[in-house]
Amino acid sequence: MVAVSLSYITLALYSIAIILIFFYSIAQLNLLINYIKGRRKAVQLPPLDISDVSKVPYVTIQLPLYNEKYVTEGLLRCISKMEYPREKLEIQVLDDSTDDSVETTTQLIEEIARQGIDIKHITRTNRKGFKAGALKEGMEVAKGDFIAIFDADFLPQKDWLLSTMPYFNDDEVGVVQTRWGHINRDYSLLTKIQAFALDAHFTIEQVGRNSRSHFINFNGTAGVWRKQCIYDAGNWEADTLTEDLDLSYRAQLKKWKFRYLEHIETPAELPAVISASRSQQFRWNKGGAENLRKMTARVLSSETINWKTKFHGILHLLNSSMFLFVFIMAILSVPVLFIKNTYAHLAMYFNVMMFFVVTSIIFFVCYWTTFKNIRGGGFKNFMIYTGLFFTFYSIALGFSFHNTIAVLEGLWGKKSEFVRTPKFNLSNTKKKSWKENTYLSKKIPKNVIIEGLLALYFVFALYSGYLLDDFALWPFHLMLLIGYSYMFVQSIAATSK
Image 1 (cartoon, helix red, strand yellow):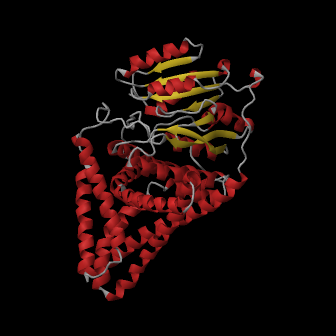
Image 2: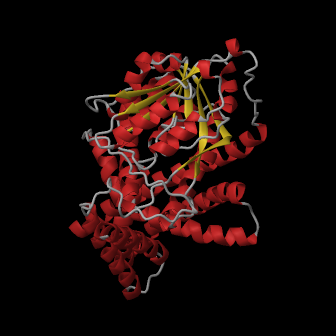
Image 3: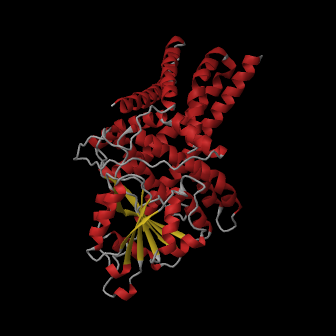
């Protein structure tokens, strides 16, 4: 009797997880449709006319730094070449660094200042509020009516401001966000997979939401804020690890418009080693869960937005929580396999797995649309895409335990430090070694051992399918085995070098 009751509970949790993931995929399909329609209607404005400097908006560029010795020079030299009237441009280097990079940065800033560029080196004695705190303090002395923000690894085109500022001609526009590019997309399998995932976010999701006036998020960098919008929304707050998502929702609840510009690409560096990717993924997913706690009631109770925007907003906030549902589904899939082959009357409930199959097909179509738009179509590219998709899917499954811990911490309200993602100054053509990077941790992450055990768990799952002569879950379990094995092996290898 107890065994049967546990079987029902297991099947119920398993089914709920799969159905929630399925509904999320339906929302993604809706965003794909919106994306296709919105892309056709996208309007590109001509560059800003700077012939009459008196009419040019004053812009402050904020560059938040924290121990970025490998990429700071590239960033500062790139920003110093920005095409914009110098009398209407201010650069704030918000430097919270605690290492010897401060001295090098000071020298670079002095060199750039001698060119007649208004650039200031703003340092703090503490990291109160982390990035959000640095941005907020910089705002207090910023001269600009508009605030452009770039993280340390971004290299915007010199006409970037001239291309983005015209969209603020509409006084209701509070933010203009551009699409991220990837200077080291083909550096390794890890960077290829990250680029693959981010491309979908910066095309289907951002355009799909923005084209229908649903909530999108400023991505923390490569965008411009109207200063008035920041203040009206309550300014930067540091109670979540994704301060950008938090301020974005508060601003849109205040009826500020966001403009997402897919056609403007801002190159940046992807984490090239698994430990750097882990820290970034943990921060993004925990911050997403923290914002789910913080913003859900505000979104649902808002009387200024329609139900479709509320629906997409909640699913957007639930984005990181999908890893929790995926992990639950994965862990329970093994006992479900035994339940199916033990209790004949419960076997029919196993058919809920079809929802996950449909979900996978939807994601396959969505990601193909993104890949085709960026890399081109044709049979050869489709085959490359297919291999990349299943590799991405496997590694994403491998991240599910790590990201689940982040989500649970965020939902429980456990606070943690803002851990920066180490940068390496790598590109596709520069096969530089990251081994000597002083910011990398040499400790084996505590989750790695569990990921190794999970890999063994899914070896058992494959063996169980063989014993039961039931191979329905083999593809799923094989991807889980590959994903967790990748996480375990790469993490051990990175710390041993």
